[in-house]
Image (tube, rainbow, N blue to C red; front, side):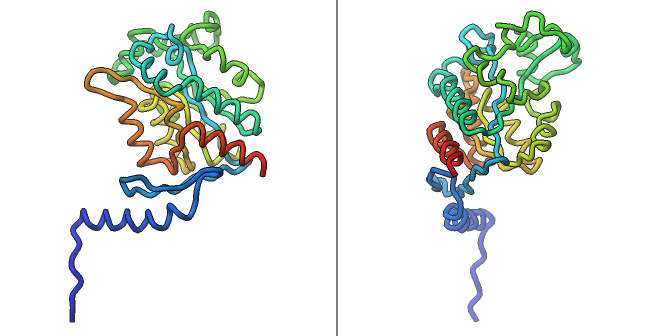
Length: 265
């Protein structure tokens, strides 16, 4: 009687990936796009846009990240320009609004009491030091207009249309400290398209948290960007994790086409 050869742990993983890649990848796709596995052999489960259940989420569409006058531009600006991030976020906003897709904003604000924290991570410390996203207080909008915490000017027509849901501010990187999940659940949302800043911090943290909360997530990497400093590339780090965690990754062109296609059905 012949015995089956034993597979090493690494071989078992590779065999499992290849099996998934020949099934799950072909089973579903982003509406209006193509499902395909890349050279890694990782499966691409796909993402179907379903009206009434799918929302666009934009994290931190604020001046300090996206304006050349913003305090973080020195480390993110090159990547923002290379990706066409500002224009791509605008295209997603426009497509979602035209399609009647719910849009959510998860902003980042720091109030005076937040500067009393007794310990911080590396980038928290940096953001507090440079006054990023600072506001006068939670009950005041004095000085908000055109500040680093304000929306990029070209996005205001979308965000201030009376329909967009602006969640309470997140305080570190993810939505665990704000009411985003509650607001989405209350509107029956269980599928989320993520764009916004910054790729390896708030966008990635929102992706991880929403996946853990049972949402199906797609990320649009060229509608994000990240800090790039000597020895560290935040965008490259984020793209790897987007691909390994989200149900689907799509560029802006494909995402907009899918949103438009879903709206016609």
